[in-house]
Picture 1 (cartoon, rainbow, N blue to C red):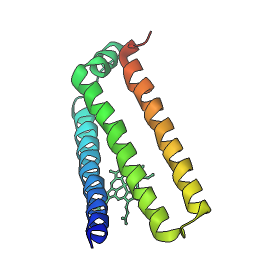
Picture 2 (picture 1 turned 60 degrees about the vertical axis):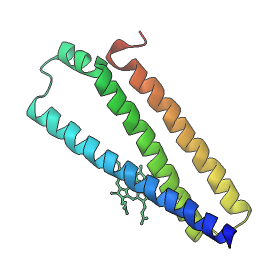
Picture 3 (picture 1 turned 180 degrees about the horizontal axis):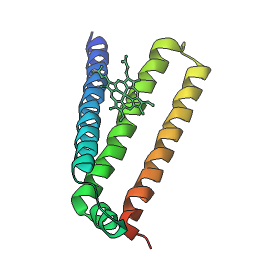
Picture 4 (picture 1 turned 90 degrees about the vertical axis):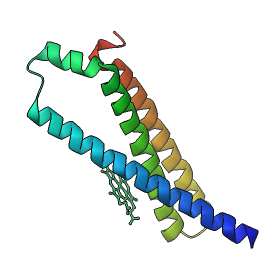
Length: 119
Ligand code: HEM
């Protein structure tokens, strides 16, 4: 019984994380695209200053993390629903986790390098 409840809770947590991250992704994209359309940086110097602003970097880093959590949970759930338990499913989990980890590593390098941060 306890195990059944635990399973239900972890499924609920995954469901919650996927929706919370989906909301952030939608708000980030709408606000980001809307803001850039309304007041686009006019030249290279303005783009650099914009991308170097701490709040922009925090928002972009959250975007990378939210995308990673959202994509990891969502695709993992697809594997759990459609791939039978066993070696193939385990291999799929490992490959997918590695791909998402690589994406996060790339995102960290990308965001910290914006505005000439690593030069
Ligand atoms: C900016 C990017 C993205 C946005 C705005 C977005 C948005 C959403 C939204 C609104 C949902 C529905 C959530 C709900 O049912 O309550 C969803 C579900 C989902 N997303 Fe994303 N998503 C994005 C990127 C991704 C990526 C990169 C992946 C995987 C590689 C992904 C995989 C999924 C999966 C598997 C589901 C669940 C579908 C289902 O349960 O039927 N999403 N997404």
